[in-house]
Length: 202
Image 1 (cartoon, rainbow, N blue to C red):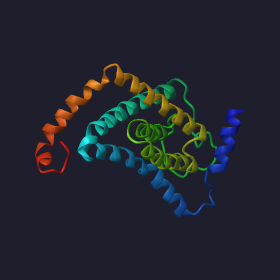
Image 2 (image 1 turned 135 degrees about the vertical axis):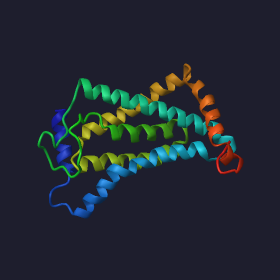
Image 3 (image 1 turned 135 degrees about the horizontal axis):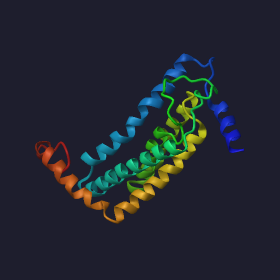
Image 4 (image 1 turned 90 degrees about the horizontal axis):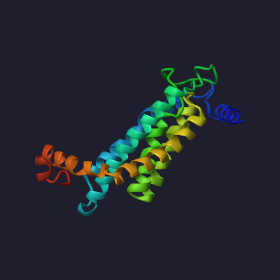
């Protein structure tokens, strides 16, 4: 039942050989490059912002990094112990993006973007998380559209992102919070001259 729904949704979303080349090109840019928005925004939260907000923003950045590591680790374990073939490996649909025949479930791209989106939602600002969920969904859609992933891969990534953020919060509460101070001190040492010039927040 679930596999049939997965296949039906894939066939509904997957592009066809008749799809315009320009549309495929845009989808490839979204699928491969838009993901950079999330880590870049997170790094920006560490370097810049109103002084009263910097501790909270840097806490968010640390928690997000922990959640990403947890999410990708679980994703790798699932792929290793319960591998699921990608659509093009099974000869289903049309593939418009070069990709290795690695396990598809859950999607690593999906895990990353949804984990970042939930991190913004839980630990930064609700409206930022909701806004960032839009490009996350678009990226997930584009990778199905190009024939690289199944819809179920993205649904799994969405759920895994919530789990990863929850586990990151637990780890933070039981001691991982201690990493923020030494990381902040290292940052202050490395970027001391730029901080003095006012380019970065102390």
